[in-house]
Image 1 (cartoon, rainbow, N blue to C red):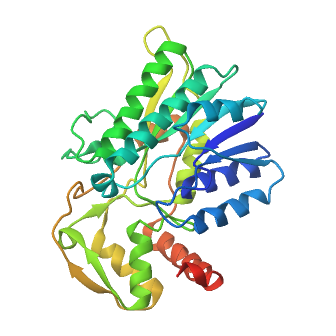
Image 2 (tube, rainbow, N blue to C red):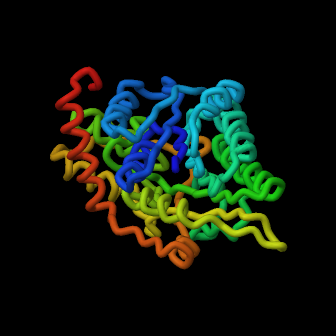
Length: 331
């Protein structure tokens, strides 16, 4: 059978697709290759996937439902969907709000409509975000907490995705699971994230912006741990009961809240160049700390992250330096 992966040219999407292909699955990848960050990086990720004979790529804007249905009707045997496509970025959502309604709301609605018409669908797994916790003060963040006070439009769209998926799971009976990712990093990562921009600036001797004057913490999660969690969830859909729809939400994090200043210390050591630090106020839409309660994932999926920040960040830096050494046009 075949797995549909949206956002396949993205950071997490490429890694999930590779993991599925390594298990012998057929994968159909969808991406619109937008210009939020350099498309050359997305194209290089796709080159890795095209090396597999069981990978098929379709360039589609998910918000165009008619195009989506027209192209997918020619693809047989899709029985699972991993929806990772989205307009990412908390800060970007403040300046470009309509990008988020189109990609994260209209695009997700297209996927839900596709799923409800897909005979034999075993499971829809979709990306949510730790940003849904907004200004919550209780740590670690638990899926039992109310998340009705988002502090960014991006977070609001991700919470909306969870509500939309629950309604479809209730109405049409197909299993759906949302995954709240906590600050994912690693090789082939996103250029808009701090680990990428800080590495680039440190190696060039440029000043890095450190918001809230460094008084911030994040639950940094290495990409391999994220992929392992997604694969475990995909293979274990929720069952429909008389009392509840076949719907769940999990946190996927490292269950460890790390200081931003420790993060910078590890990076500068890995790069081998001292960091020049510019201590700045907190940015709008940001939160001071994230920390994932992953006990439900441990209990239900046997999930256990294995990569500490001190080990994962140097792996990213090694990849970053090799990648830029091979691809001078991307510097």
